[in-house]
Picture 1: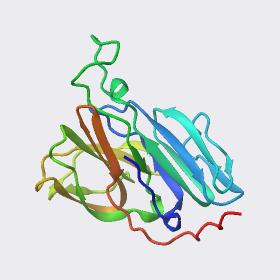
Picture 2: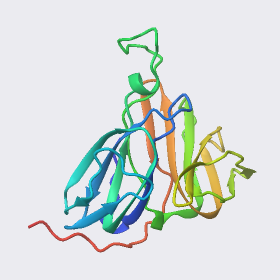
Picture 3: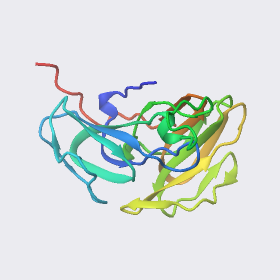
Length: 220
């Protein structure tokens, strides 16, 4: 699966987290950072990942390769960050099947965009299809945020990322025919992730979609 956000919704501040894997761990993901304007300068307050750029021009992008941990990235102009899931033989390996032919392996590459902090929300209504084996909500939030999922408090400790933000990873039940409601005491970001046999999905569970960045210059 692929997705594309309007350039006018790109922000200047992101927290980038690897998706929860089918076994509840974080096996990593491939991160790509896209420039939208010439001369964009980037910084990494919580630590700079290997291969990360410090500047980008319009239309330029950099692949960081497989990134295991979460990080924070800011810039002086709007830009975008995409995440690509790894294949099932990497995220759900079978030790007895070194050739990766396990017919029950869960996972497949899928693309999503990280949500800019400027577009975080306090309420999400989202879908996690119930015909997938496993689904998760990965929630980036200020560390003292109170969360409710489908009317119940989320009592999962956040893992710190930096600048007072952390990530909470919550397994999803069936909900209302796959529909869920997340509410938060402060604006949060949401990625929804699911796995089945040789398949997966990931998408931003919502965002404000405010036009906060100027449109890019037309091609020259």
